[in-house]
Image 1 (tube, rainbow, N blue to C red):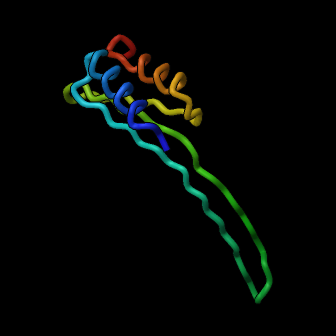
Image 2 (cartoon, rainbow, N blue to C red):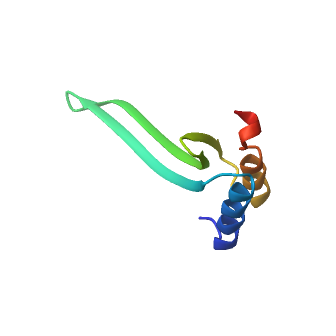
Length: 87
């Protein structure tokens, strides 16, 4: 989903911002639901969860930010805003 070089840049940026640990979570999940009652379809739903979350750990405190923009520019932007100054 993300290039290793992008992941390395995100981790290094978080550490450079003073984080003790950086966690990156990617999700691209497709789900569907079909509800039947008395052999008749009563509900049909389809959905997709798609995004990236970055969690920065500062000792016992943590910051979490996320986006559905997978571009390296967007990911670096949300990670750079996750600093202690924003607590």
